[in-house]
Image (cartoon, rainbow, N blue to C red; front, side, top):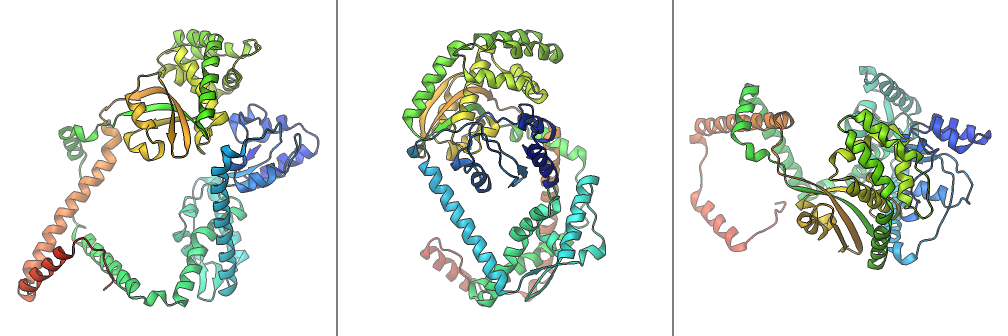
Length: 500
């Protein structure tokens, strides 16, 4: 059961403790529409390696049938009921466990360091000011608009040895608070302030205590930054009178440079990434067996495809999936597809998939592969996207040789096992996008900004040249020294910038 607020989560927990079934509470109060439609049941297992620490701590101490308390997560709160459990071979997960332990230690050390610096510099919260900030955020979420009065800006939130941190300064330093989304709980607001405002403030205090601000390289960098800001201010003054780029100018440039706005070629795949080559080959075998048993699904998809583009009629045809009898030995993916049809959003996604698929058979096989990704893939972000990725050539850093193979393969092809770092990937090619020209409406805004910047560059260049001419007699170029410096730099070769 997922809720965005602690209050709603507490209501759900109270209903469970009063004897209401988990499924009914999930349907009534869970704010995840996909799992709520299934009574909260998730289509995959949670593993220690891909669960956040609060979830892991709450979940893996429960026996089958037990219900957790309210578990805080980045986007809200969750309540879990354990339906089943199974063991995974250590060899398959030790790499992810090692990474998780490293991250845990890093977080623990960061928290300990924050506590130490808080004590050392006397960091203290102002409860009244924090209450005002939380109230402003809650009201803004309800009304769709955030308002800070002049008095609000000056309210103290924290104080330490260096002085008072006011609400206005905190908002200026925190991008998350300026956006305001999901910050209707005081604990989350404090956590955001800690990460984005207080930790940098305390680290800066320690740096000054150690006199790092007097370090020659830091002084040089600071001076350089100051000069850059001054030049930026001069540029703004010099270009302030430049007129805005018109719609006609943007359109003319777009029409004259269409090739610049051509999309790169991409290939769409469903990928499953596992720990060993042996496991990958076992999944290929499972897929080969399952594809022989998807005729009922293919039949329903084919009937729905005949009724497109009438989405209403096609949607009604898809509901036949819910009445298909469950057969012994049928692929588990069929049950997953049935559950998608039961949800409006899931049915809509099925219709979109059907409209782009090359055939009902190919779409049925794609769903088999998506289910394998949900159940088995070790790529952390794979489950929410059901293993679906659009690959570009620049994705080789993440997907390795899989990218080249996918770009060269035919639609419907199976790829792998392909080794990607220490893991092994399988993929099914499900789509390809050509190099179409992006529509004008899509590029007009960034293009206008770029043309405006170019116009300002030209204006600043003219202004700088006029400034040089006006002060030509006041500046003397020592040509011999400049040539000597150039010779020294060329002889030394590439060098890093030094603070001197």
